[in-house]
Image 1 (cartoon, rainbow, N blue to C red):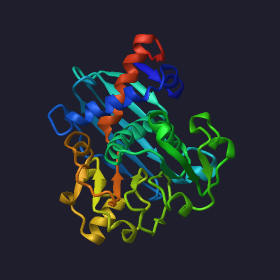
Image 2: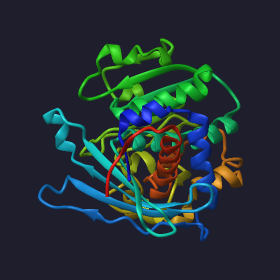
Image 3: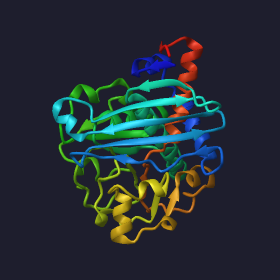
Length: 323
């Protein structure tokens, strides 16, 4: 069995076009017999704010892998100087079930989340066919940074400015990364990262919803952390995109809130697969905001994990564990 950590992943390298292609290839075969992905269970005990999620899947096609991601989210860790989330992925040979790799660390989750977002961003930008995007980021932790890292790598020339807000404060040097091209400004309120923004990323661990105002006309709301918007602020949005309705309409997400309080149903939503391969955004009016809510699919995690495992084997990177 091969052991990999975040350092090994960085040694192999982060090539956004390649990672996005892996996600897109998996998205294409979702809903077929080439992907098996049961509903993920949530383990809770003690403090109900904490959870550990099991994410098993089999992905065929080029990935051809089975396995499970085990991810813990303990929001209180932040006050203790620890990361909120910790995760590990175990990969199994799909032919005989033998464990072949364990990947420990949060970087792969960050890369998966951002690569999924890249598909939504690409389709939105195809729809708008313009440049000079004004971007807002609410939550400047690992997820927020990886989202913007991907955005600037893929579409940096099309971004005019980025406003950053985090309730815990932001170290100025973190907003001076060369990849941001001096386009980032730290603002003191979430409203300033939300008002008049064409694209808004919400990436917090907030215990309560706080966004209580409707978005700018035509904006793309990248609701990565899923629990940010009151029903009043989002119920008027006509275009709601999800990765998987069964997964996202539960666990107190904004989608579940809209389902319970505003009558949102699966038929009222569009899937990311329909956006990527069915041109689902083509008929969206220019003034209509788009509300993207990705719960996170195990199949995507395993597709990227399989790529990094095979690259590590090819390049003799990582630690071999004895049986």
